[in-house]
Image 1 (cartoon, rainbow, N blue to C red):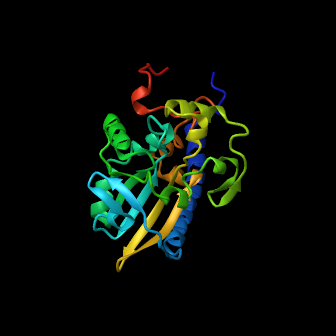
Image 2: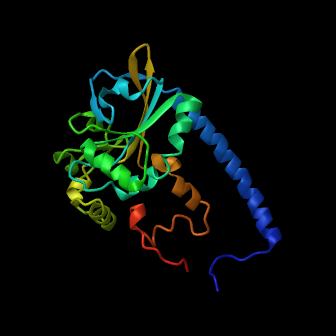
Image 3: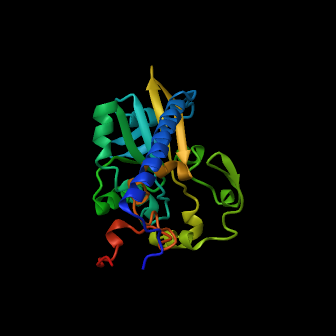
Length: 255
């Protein structure tokens, strides 16, 4: 028999109504946070960045594609990866359908940026059946400046998600080793990349950095997590420590 609390329909309904009040407050709080994000000061981007794209070499302003807003997902795919980070791949599985809506509904260009060479990124994109635009920053400081790439020295301490971190190689977790293996690289090379997203605005020819988020700040953008947070067992992370690439899951019958 299940160890979970069992109740009547009436008890469930009373508890659900109480939870609904908390959910509505959470929604109002989220609206307030979104307003505060929009009110952050814009910072001019003064460094010249260059990217390799399917349409040739582009500046950061060129990535906007004629639109006024740009959202970049910093996809963990380093030069020495053989495939993308499984966690980044899981979130990217939801990008294809979002990109055209953002472009036509809100004048937003959305794309991924990684440090791996463009040819490797596009080959992986084809393998995964994705169509969203992807740019390579392999010879640029872009990922380093926006806190999603580290040097070898940076593995022993630095800043991420607006806070300092210690030596990342001191105690490599099982999840890191698993993700590194699934990305076809060493744990040390895997840790040189980190996930994140950054938003930019283009006004009167000037590019402004408006917002960035990292770590748990990306959860709301991850479609699978939003569904799991409403599933009976939640994220169930104790049973599964790491994501797998979508085309590598074993086909098994659900118990």
